[in-house]
Every structure is written in C-alpha cells, then in structure tokens.
Amino acid sequence: MKEHLSIELLERYINGECTDDEAAQVKQWYLSFEHDANYTSALNAAQQKELEEKIYNSILNNIDAVNDQDALVINKRSNTWLWVGAVAAMLLIAIMIGLYRQTNTGNQDMLASNQQEMVAITNNSHRIYKSKLPDGSTVWLNPNAQLKYPKEFAASSRMVFMSGECFFEVTKNPERPFIISSHSIITKVWGTSFRVRDNEQSSEADVAVVTGKVSVSIKTKQNINNTRLNIENGDVMLYPHQKAIYSAYDHTLKPVTKSDESALKIWNHEDLLFDNKLMKDIVPVLNARYKTHIVVANEKLNHYMLNADFTGFNLPDVLEALNKSLSIDYEIKNNTIELK
Image 1: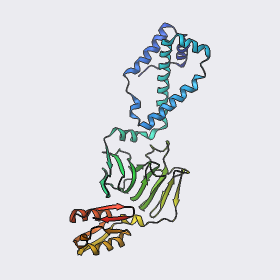
Image 2: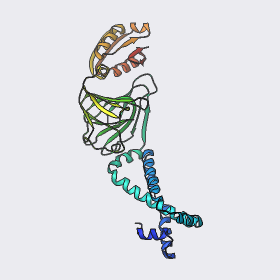
Image 3: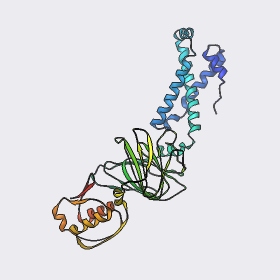
Image 4: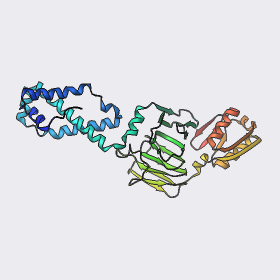
C-alpha cells in the first residue's frame, strides 16, 4: 500500500518551500509509480480518450493559478518544475482513475470482454451468413454486416457488438442479459427474435421485434457499459410487431405504431414439405409464405427437382439447404433474391 502524501506537502514542494527530506519523500513517492501496472491499458480507446480529456481540462483549469512571476521561476528552475509537473500529472491521473472507477461500477463486464479473446465476423459474401454464439443464440448477418463477441461471455451479461443488419434469435437467460451495442443505439434483450439495423454510413437505425420483447436506447457515455437489464428514462420498450427508429439528424428515438412488416417475414419459421417438386413450382410457394421476391436468374434451375422437409425453417435456412442439396447459389439485390 503506497503512502499518501498530504496536499500541504505537495503545495510546499510546488512552491519550493520543502525541506530536503520532504523533497526526497515526494520524489520517492513519484518514482514508486514506475513499477505499477498501467491501469489505463485496461480501458478501451474511447475511455482512454475521455480520461485524457478530463486530465487535460483539469490542467488547463489550474494554469490560471500560476502568475507571471511564477512563470519566470519556472524558466530559471526548469529541472525542478519538470519534477513538479510530473508529480502533478501523476496526482491528476490517480484522482481521475479513481473517479472514473467510482462512476462506472458497471464497467467490469466490459473490461472482462475486452481482455478476453474476441471473435470478429464480417459477411463479405452476397448471401446471409449464419453464426452460433457461445450461449447457443443464433445471429444471421446480412451482406456487409459485422459482428464481434467474446469467445466466452461474462458471468453476469452477454455483450455483443454489431454493424449493418443482423437478425437475432437469443437464448433466454434472465440472469445473463443479452446486450447489443451498435453504432447509435443499445439494444437490451428481454425476449427472443428481432432485427437490428445500424451502421456508420446511415443516418437512421432501427430495431424491429418478431417475438418476445427488447428495450432500445440511444447510445451515450453513461449507458454504453450498463449491463443491467433495466429500463432507463428515454428507453423504448418493443413487443412483437413493433419497431423503433433512431434519427441522427435530431438525435431522437421513437416507436413506430404502424410499419411494413413484410421484410421480417423471411425470419418466420414455417413448416414446408416438398415431395419431388420442381423449382419452378417451389419458388412461388416460398414467395407466398415468406412475403419475399425470389427470381430464378438461371432458367435451368427451374427444372431441378427437390424432395425435402423444411419443417421449422426460416427463409435463410431454406436457401442454405438449397445451396447444399442442389448447389443453388443466391444473391441479395435490394429487395430481390436471385437464384443462380
């Protein structure tokens, strides 16, 4: 445990009023930090930047206390004032780190996630990519979507990071909240399946619920590390068939009472059975069930025959099965799915 120096002693040191023994005590205290762990290395880039700005502003606020005469003394006694500046900076860092830890008690899970090995996925294909998470939850990534999560979730929460468009089916576990951090919003999962669309290139983000319920909030410095499953002021709670839209223009998050849900139908789990059916007969059935627009870009595919049981499949799973069984590829172009 390090010895705490009194403010009076530091002030006497800064004013050049210390005895030789007191000056040696201050220098020894400062040198003792050389072998300490670098606490700021545990903070992410945004947190380090925030801490740096706080320290810098604190230094600026104290510059006014130095008068012109003191400035002349600084020039004449540069070596001594280098020590003083170092001690003052170290003192500020110690204070700021203490304040930062006190005001961010919910930060432990985030730090644990940062220290763990992370899995990063980017869907560079033209198809929907399916990924299983460590807790058994499933995420489908649309083209160009990104997902990042720890190889093992923290004990008290499941934090993932995403960009683009993803559809989630989350394994229920009230004791370990599932929280999604994207560019503009934070989504806390209280239910099971929903879609999140949010990326740096768009001025809007939205969350649409298929089953269960989620709460959505605008991302701020205050809530970015909050891993508790609770409702804060300004949060929007969504239930099945409900949607919330965030607008970067006016920095607002609003629920939508009436929205077009057709784009979400592809995530419905349907029971489909095809007994030696031609693809030209299967495609209309898929379009009707999933309220989508599938077209056959290669005419010969229409003559492929399929015998399959798609019980409980959503459309991305059906398309994946067609790819594996008949080598039929597909590409998503706007609101159209082209079979190749």
